[in-house]
Length: 240
Image 1 (tube, rainbow, N blue to C red):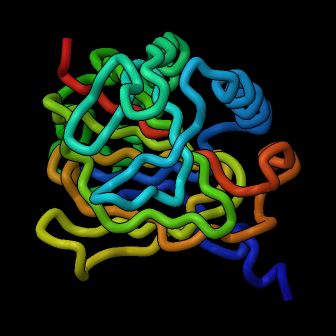
Image 2: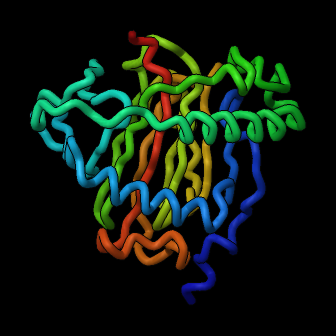
């Protein structure tokens, strides 16, 4: 019965989800996923530990580590003033290169789809080599974690958001730019998948409705965390 719900049973072809939003299933190969899991182990050691950010007096169900900048609702800071006041780790150069590779591959998918009017990176306002993210929010979801529908709007620069998934599959809800209601689409983001949204979709509401336990492949398993999912989102803050 489980095989009926395995990710292989669903359409896993790269595609345009909405104008400005592209899904790249299986972008990270097995070695890359395992390597990023090892990096996460290092990030866990600090200087700022994984923590639940408080929004409107309530802690989020995800645990976050910031690279480059520390995020609190409505602000970015170099120090985690709401955690331990330590300066966050620098944004790694390899992540910039990886983000550019995602943008370039997504542009090829978009160019072949009439839903994407410009047909290349220019629809996101930049070429892949001009993509310069300076912050990554690394979120860990355990089996019960969720994230409500929201917009990523604390950045001054509207460059695309690049998302990478490792571990258990999640149900990712990608919506419209007007409100949290329909139209939206629920997408099974599996270990190794990349997702880009920018241009007309940059401020689309999106969230995670559930984690599908024990769906990670062998190379993407987060056994040291008790399972779950890691999500890396790269953004460009536009801040000095």
